[in-house]
Image (cartoon, rainbow, N blue to C red; front, side, top):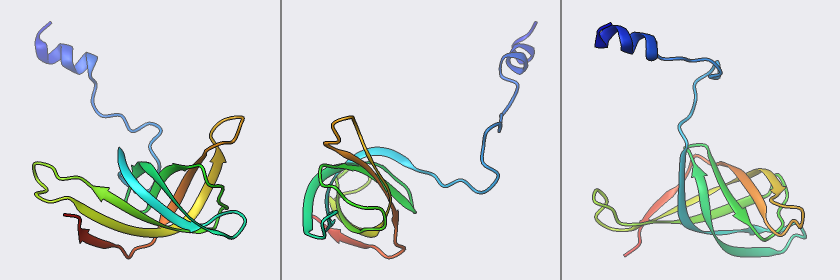
Length: 127
């Protein structure tokens, strides 16, 4: 058996089983510091520092100690660090509506939050 035959047997080609029928959006699993603000479950304004865990063009996921309700509006201030490609750190201002908020553990001290992002955003220098 030559290498070409072995690779065809061991790696038969791309598999799309389980992939959604529609167009799939690319999400990035990364940790970026963020300041989240909005109204908590009792209607009071809050600001909380956290890290986002995943972001795409349409959704963002993060954890909060503050209790918030589905449908609540949130504003996220993300600190994007300087990289080899990005010469200066940036601040990304996003807003959106909470899609889900579920208790992370039995004690309910933190919530896993997912929010649908608005199309508008602001990108500012963070130097």
